[in-house]
Length: 462
Image 1 (cartoon, rainbow, N blue to C red):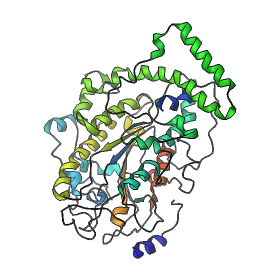
Image 2 (cartoon, rainbow, N blue to C red; image 1 turned 180 degrees about the vertical axis):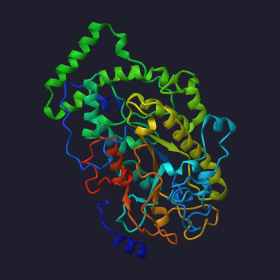
Image 3 (cartoon, rainbow, N blue to C red; image 1 turned 90 degrees about the horizontal axis):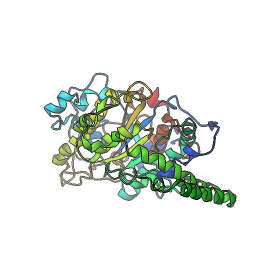
Image 4 (cartoon, rainbow, N blue to C red; image 1 turned 60 degrees about the horizontal axis):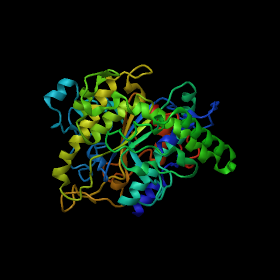
């Protein structure tokens, strides 16, 4: 442990480094002049319109797939063969597990992940607290850090994103365009928020049943009754103490936002389970259902791509369950099949779907993958139960996170580096919070008031 503290202390200290209806309240507010606030922007600012953020739940052993050119004690499965040329980051052999790739899927156009590794950039060393003496390998606190940036964090990352995009959403509304907010399809803690951020908490979807969202109770009332209710709310808002105005205003505006959302969620395009052959944005729901599968993270990703059509900036998805304290040696190659299909289906669909603003969805989308921490066998390939654990060492510490999509200019590159002997950092180390601000930056969101000690970085876009 002393060794790790010493090594970390020598690193260059780059600065290692807010309800669904109310989230769009700004979108239907009174006429609004958008004046962008000053931010520390990267060269990638505003280059993306959408983010698919995937958590490999339970703690994923990253070197088995990403940054895999390390010792056997960190990646006991070895390196993949036949990877795409121009790939620097050492794809692990598990990315080549292809039992999921049937003849039908191959004919559709899906391919092995190893065929497009040069479309991904990998940050070798991402850690929640790079200046701490050891990793946080605790399931509870590690997950809190993943969802909010801190232990006990009060604002989820997706709430921050919706808050940071509030002026963009308002500007779109001025031209008559209602945009969906960021949406959660995984751990709801990603959408925590109170105070000024409470109005920007993202909706949480469980499955693709949108029936709860596609109805509008006020539409059943006669016009005079709707006018009476709306007028009362506005008069009440205008008389409240200025300190409570924003809260009441968020409620008032959410009425109109809810009406707009009801129309969107009733769209046939979002009925991803109907196996329709109707073409939307270049692909049918039948094709997407075949590519992504009928359940779990794949079905959520299918719905995510459809939600993007309606302006949704980001969707958060949980995939798998990788807490293999035993039998990792035999179980992980099976478990990762679903993740490999998910990555392949995303690459296939994004490159074929036509974005409403022009180009393909690939041109406008980033796919990012993380976990609450990585895993360790404490110097051996596996522990005594043929699994792995999580503690305070480098092996637990480094999330070697992959990023792919058109805005990622560093495709194929390994950014930062680790020793193959002990995983000690030999290059750039990034805080998890600075990574998230970089994603917000790419989506054109304001982020100056979040994580002030952690700055976004250019490395993925240069």
